[in-house]
Structure formats: C-alpha cells, structure tokens
Image 1 (cartoon, rainbow, N blue to C red):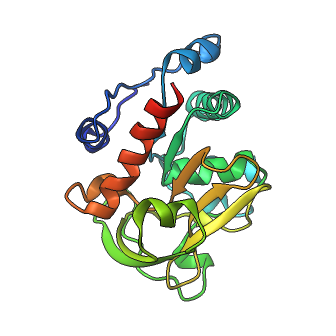
Image 2 (cartoon, helix red, strand yellow; image 1 turned 45 degrees about the vertical axis):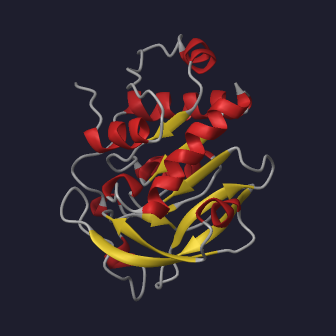
Length: 222
C-alpha cells in the first residue's frame, strides 16, 4: 500500500501562502486528535471511488476498479470530523466533497454517464479533464469568496451527489443539475466542498481564491 498526493495540490497551497504536507494515516487512528490539534486547516483531496456499501449503493459494477481503501476512508472520515469539531477550516475537492456527503448520510451516483439523465461531459476519471461552467448561489459563502455567480471549472470524475446528506446546503450546479458545491447549514464557513478540481487551473483567479480562503481562515482562527 502507498500514500501519495498530486503535486498540483501542494503548489496550490504554497501559492496561497500555506505550508502543505500529506498526513499518513495510522492503522489504529490513535493519532487523529493529535493531528487535528497540530494542523491549522485541512484539504480533503480527490481520489478513488468510495465503496458504495457505505451509502447502500445498488450498482457496484459501475465503480472504478480502483476503490478507496478502508484505511483511508476511515482516516478521512475521522480527521474531517475532528477538524470540524475544532472549527478549523476545511476545503474538500471531488471525492472529498462526496465523502462529506456520505458521512452526513447522503448517497452518490456510481456513474453519472449511466445514471444521470442528460449528463454533461465531466471529464474522464483519472484521465483527460474537461471544462464546463457552474452556477453559484449568490447567497452562499462560496459566491462571496469568488465574487461571481457563474464560473468555469476543471472536471474529471464519474461520480457525484445523488441524495444530499443532512445539514448540507447545495450551492452550485452544472448544466445537467448535478450538485457541484456544498456548505454546512449548522456551522457556516466551517468548510467549502467542491466537485471540480481547482488545483488543475492554477492560473485561474477564481480557483486560486478557494485556496486563499483556506489559508486566510486558518490564520484568522489560529
């Protein structure tokens, strides 16, 4: 087993003024509280499909052959919960957003092309990415961060939110109706979660603002 993070994520954090490092999850999760106490903010990065038994998915045959390990799923779940409890800022990307939805009791489409009528091109999972627009709710924190209600994003995934989890607010959508971003209704500004990949557009001012939000919130709350 190995643990790695794509360099784009590091570069995005560094360019926003932060110091990035990868958390290597322990088998017994005994260090979760210590990790959360030490770090100032959490970036939940993209990754493989989450086992669909966790949300009672009915179509396991539509999952990619690369499925998230139990060790990572448990660690990501626990570190998210601990950071949320400490009110430290969290930015979740792609499967990170999907995981938050599952943690809150929501479900996923196992494959958008086969299960979402009229699905647009969301890119190829682990392959070529596409560009498409998303509409953002003007009343959302995300809209205030980006200062726009329609932006272009980089997309490379085949799954997405089907049923929304509890205490989550949908705040952005692609043209096919897929939820592209969520926020928390109970603790506003606790996290921003997006389906797209802002790290793949490092020179796009709108995408850079997401990482700047994470770093500035970390400084403000420390």
